[in-house]
Image (cartoon, rainbow, N blue to C red; front, side, top):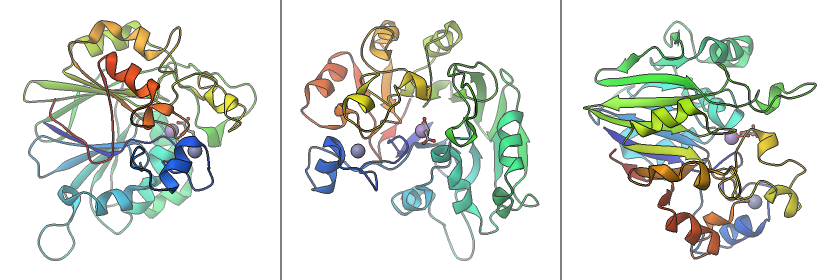
Amino acid sequence: MKALVLGSGAGGGVPQWNCGCRVCRMAWDGDARVKPRTQSSLAVSADGESWLLLNASIDLRQQVLATPALQPKGEGRHSPIAAALLTNTDVDHAAGLLALRERQPFTLWGTQSTLDTIGANRIFDVVGRDIVPRRAVKLGEPFEPLAGLRLELFAVPGKAPLWLEEGEVKTDQIGEGTVGVVVEAGGRKLVYAPGCAHVTGDLKTRIAEAHALFFDGTLFSDDEMIANGLGDKTGRRMGHMPVSGPGGSLEELSAYAHMRRILIHINNSNPILIEGSPEEAKVKAAGWDIAFDGMEVTP
Ligand code: MLT
Ligand code: MN
Ligand code: ZN
């Protein structure tokens, strides 16, 4: 199995169009210590020919331009992208479907809840249902979106997408709204969970059986958006547990140091994106890698 990081950033990417925070400023200025990043998505394949997208980022077109494996082979219409799966309906994970609208057959996978949300928004009908069937899968029931690639979805605590928030928002709902994915091929397993409000026993069990983990690296500190004057929400309010601090991912997932652990969906406010920063050093010392666009992982 091969996994390609198409996008390693959280919503907005790096630099974000309207942001001059410390990390974005360095990226705008072309400082080599900060790599530009597009928004969160992985491509996985068992044979290197057909690829499954795990989330369809709003930057998908740019990601295909940067990724030869995903470009058409031969003449006429063709794409190695044969399937796409959404882990939730956040804009950064779902809006990329609109970039796949040129009458190309593939299969769209998700929980019933995710497909219902997409189905209720008619703009997504531009991706013709006649050639792009939508296939609902139940949590905990393995399926094979591509030959040789076995997947299983499991609930991770999360919240409704920002564009559907109303009233009092529950930030750690367990259900079909936010899922993690186990991908298995040739006896190797990876877990992908780009959004997670807190670590559950179920998630720990899944991680313990895997060879590689791509995990929610949105914020380093829970309050970093507020502390930097970039917003009024904590990470936890956004449904993302922080990397550092009590209950953060370094602490919660310290038992899995033997496996490949990679932070992904990293917000532009997060100082781990600055190479040579103390925060980057702390994460690396704890045995974690920091995803970058174009990273290739063989679990
Ligand atoms: C998130 O990851 O919290 C969302 O992508 C936020 C958003 O939709 O802007
Ligand atoms: Mn996001
Ligand atoms: Zn920024």
